[in-house]
Length: 243
Image (cartoon, rainbow, N blue to C red; front, side, top):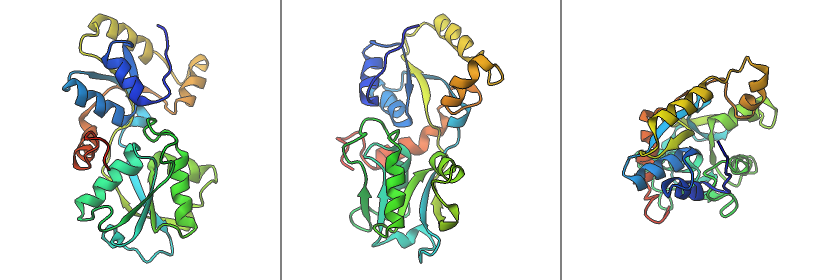
């Protein structure tokens, strides 16, 4: 096996579909994009245990007068970069489902409008900057991936007693290893056998496993990407990113 690195997921999706690479570790929106462009012919073969059932939080100050998500009318929501699946796409679709249209019923304050685009929200400082906007009174609420909230409240970067959740999105899965339909099944199985043989309890494997934020590799599943697929459709994400 050889390894190629890409500076953004858009380039990685192109490379996979053109056959320049065989297997790609995709972000959620990169996986949805791959299926969108391939007509649903690619396969998701593996993922981290930590990729399952992720949610986005809409966060307000504990002292905020907002009591429910519908109270966001005429308010400002701070979010991460344009192509952040969790802190932008799913959150905006969540509000849309509750009758709130961006730029009409509420204002969006976006961070890192150019830096990090193509990284699909992996440029995580956008989540923190969005929360800081709430802290400074520049926004009424912010959106954040639950993994970031958990990390930052544990390491002291966020004092959880200062905030509360106004709303929690539907559960949706995160990253997956993806490959094309024409990838040989026998080679796929050999590759997966090697991947699944990795153990958190093996000292030789543990450092990489911890760096990747998991305890176990699992078979890929696609059933929990529907909230993101739905959000991309509702927000016209693949029609020129006009959101």
